[in-house]
Image (cartoon, rainbow, N blue to C red; front, side, top):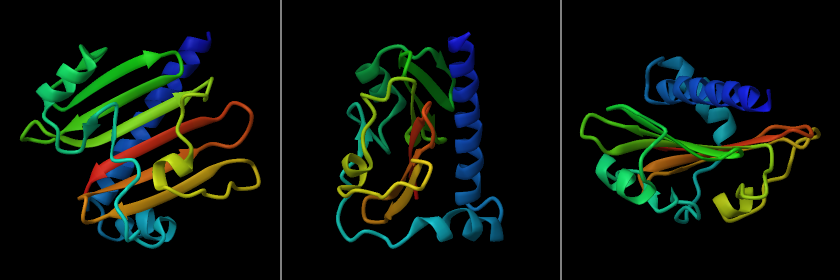
Length: 165
C-alpha cells in the first residue's frame, strides 16, 4: 500500500514539474510571471551550491547520464526515471539534442538522504508555519534555475528541480 502511495506521489511530482517547466519555458505568456517571479526572489550573485545530481548536470548527454547512473527504471527519448530507493527517485528530461534540460529529484518517507535548503542554496531558508519550505533561485551565468520544495506535515516530501534557462 505504501509503495502505491509513493508511486502516486511520484506521478503527481512529475506532472507538477512538467506543468511548471512548461510555464517557465514560456508556454503561457502571463502565466510565466505568475508562476515564477513572485516566489523566485532575487537572483543570487554567486554560483549555485547545488549544480547537479549524482554527478549529472544540466547539459549532460543521455549517454553520460546512463553511464553514470546505470539503466533507468523507465526510459524514453525525452525522459529517464531512476528509482534509487523507497525514498529517493529522479527524472532526467532531455531536449532534442539529447542533453539534460531538466532534473527532478524527489525524496519521500525517510528524508535522511534529502539535502537541506542550505545544501542546495548555500544558506538556510526559513520554514513556513506548517514546516514547509519553498525557494527558487535563478543562476543565469550557470544557465539554469533551482527550486526546493518541502511539504509541511509529518509525512513530508522534498522535491528539487533544476531546469535550463
